[in-house]
Image (cartoon, rainbow, N blue to C red):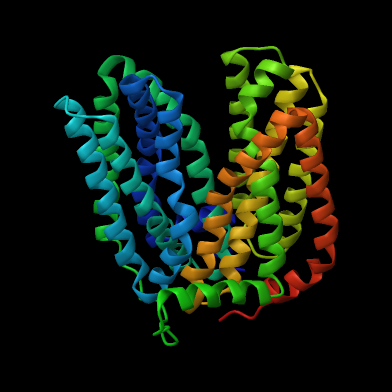
Length: 415
């Protein structure tokens, strides 16, 4: 065994030159992006003092993923992903420049903020589809799972670091200062992806049909695939039934644990810390072998942690299972993403991975609405207890597919 091969997978991944540029471009964008998200919400509240407008602005940022993700994947498979990444990143850079400039000039109105949120919400599916397609080009096949996990760990860690930094910036420099910070972070990403050079993907079998036909074919392909279908089933169930727990934590903090904003902060932070630990765990283990087991175990752990979380009224126990749930969800979603990356070729990568984005990034919004309505009628604890049991039932139903996934992906010959 060579000295390079003997090094831990995370070290080998971080030593890849292309991945270094890729991650170096995304890290500042991740952190300052979360700073800007906090600032957008605070600005919307300052402009309107309306919870309805807060919801509208949040929906404008996330809802386009549900509609555009499949088409973004089809576009990504028709052009070079790196080029699409550069275009979408530049659009996002112009978006934050507009935010900073209009706020600094005192010209911002809630209607303008909505339009800008919608613009970046429409750009994000294309940015995400391109990012998913670029990762495999930056590392060897055996390091796919490590690269995906490192990217996930960076995203989740900044999801909590970013808001903490925003809490320091906004009181001192206002939302304009937060937007200027994101202008800097987004600008670094524009430069990094302009510098990055990758071999062009194989487009030998590129489709010449219209986008709608491509999307329909992708859905049919995923449903027929013996490994991708069960992976998307557990991902979808987790996204609809388990992930909305994070959105409902304010209710648990108040009604179940009889706490306040500090209680909510502890629960939210614990879930985030668990997610970071989970992503780092997958990155450290590296390799392909056993990844299916990690995905299935993470799904079951998420379901059980959610069940134990909702049956307790002890805050310490609740914080513990919040952390465990975040860990389980992270190792499941990261492993599913890596397995899907391994299952597809360049011709179908963008379209197939767009289904991952649609389900994992878009479906929790649907789940939050469904779970919220059910919780309004039956209570938070009973609703999530039933959701947890449904997740366990899905786990049992997909167990027969375990060996099929292993044979189709983990033992797939290197291409």
